[in-house]
Length: 248
Image (cartoon, rainbow, N blue to C red; front, side):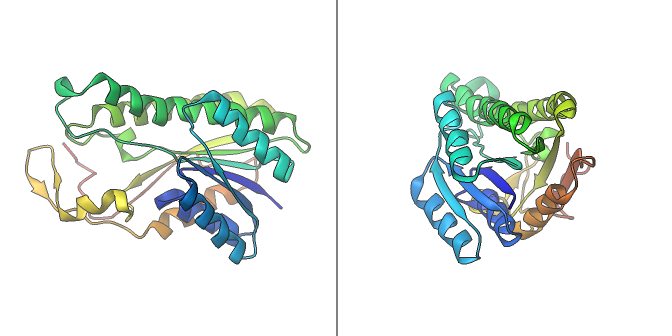
């Protein structure tokens, strides 16, 4: 049985990916801040015939991250896949009006949290037998082009691209592959406002199409299904008619 850790696993993309992995026979650790949705997701994984474990985790806290990976090791003995999915945004205000605490909150979750989980996963993957594993980072199309008033989120997602490349390079000698999925408008609670109307680069408000989150889950499954000598370095999955290509 392969084993996956999914951060931000209680809701949205993380939950969908975790359950898709469970349907493929993975043991899945659902990690995130809120216990209740994690437990619900783990129970659903169990109903699918897989083993699901809920571990409340603050990815910005090194001790909490260490506890997550120690608990995964205790429960399953190894780690084959980390899906770095946990992330937050900031209020859509002009850059010069953004508060320092909001900036720090986004950076600590979206970037430092991914670094801490990646670091812990590499330590586990390089020492286990057989060694190796795969890390998939949730980038976002904001890793390529910003929305208006999105400096913290956009900056961290651009940084994730650099971390993905560094992890891919540094992990090679340990049989650790790393790739990134950039998602545009998956239909989750977080994107409901986009369907009602989102501000565009020119200031107009335009409703944006969304895609079923299961399309994202299937894309992650494909990335995860490859042998460790093959890797999807970057994949973009987006609503075909969303205003991304040519944005700005």
